[in-house]
Length: 406
Length: 123
Image: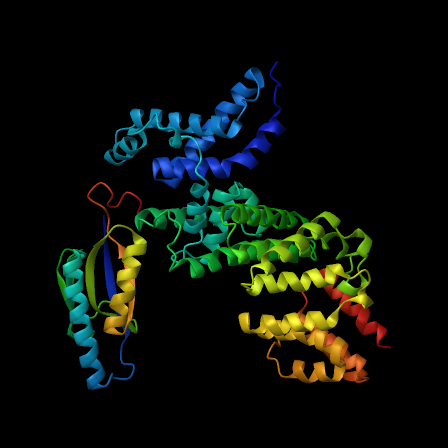
């Protein structure tokens, strides 16, 4: 007796399966728009027939087959030469099982297309969320706080460029792979940090972006299990996300790492993150994401803040600097220096950094000034941080620190 | 196969390149042209005189108006171009990288419309 799926069940299947279906259809039809239309149409059919006939045993395969058949029907109705050529491609091997069965590489190819360096970084994010994660344009627009029409335009323009330039659906060859993979990882991390930043602002809807980024990273790890940086990125996201619920108090004020309620950290995410860190460190091919994940692992390993292994954290930052020689990394390293060698030495290093527009720079500097007893300068630094802060929880936290100076 | 325009861009009036370097770039570009032909990617190529030799013709109105060019007063100008045939954008970008290294200038890659049916449909 088949179970009748509800609209929610169908929506969940769409979330879980549409990315894979679209990727397979892009291979079969050779065109993103046609693939999206066909998958969309197949879900319309599903919404009509599944509640009566029950959920098919393999909903993804059902959608892919239906989408392909719908696309072929549509080619028959339309007569432009281009469409007929595509039809020929789609129909040359209608009985071959690989046509409907998804190849794992289908999605990987499409990820590399979405994150191709010939497209803008805004397009990378929009296309990845839409074609790989299966988000709808209004959801993506809401997450990035841009009007829906702007996001739609961005996606249309990127798809037009893919088509016009004959941008390939291909996993880059060995020579190109490291650079191209870096750009894919950067896109996923950008999606994550956008969501993570939202968790300290008033815009809660964007927290979905963290979930999507983790889902995408998990997918990438499944597709490229031999890439330690992909595993490192997933671990970093999990270990950061594990603390999400404790980053802002009930009063809406930001809570920094040492003051967070560690009992409320997500133990499952931490366990998985630690496991992944160990797994990739064993390969001994370190990279920026793996080392950052290792740092997050040390923090989440400490039962209390004052039992943090700061010597280990500092050693890891020393390892991170060559991979990511940025002032932001130097600033974070200085926090570890303060714990290991004292605030005076850390302050000297912080004073060398050119990060005037960066709130954490002024907040860190203010705290170090406070700890070395230069209270008036600490107050000025807090004022500067407060004037730059845009998120309310952060501003209120800084104002509290400023007031506590006395 | 698709066709791409690889146009060579330079900034007008920014420091003249030393003669020896110009000569090297010229020879490297000649070798690259030979390679394109040997690889079957070559459609057409050419180097242009400086923009101050350009003339603009406008026959969109009732009268044909001829003016001293260039059309665009932009600092960036086209110094030359290749038209190449490549299986996809990645292959065209790889050719552009070789062309850019040879002529020592930035190269823009732009696809041609496939044919009359493609032309203008998505404008």
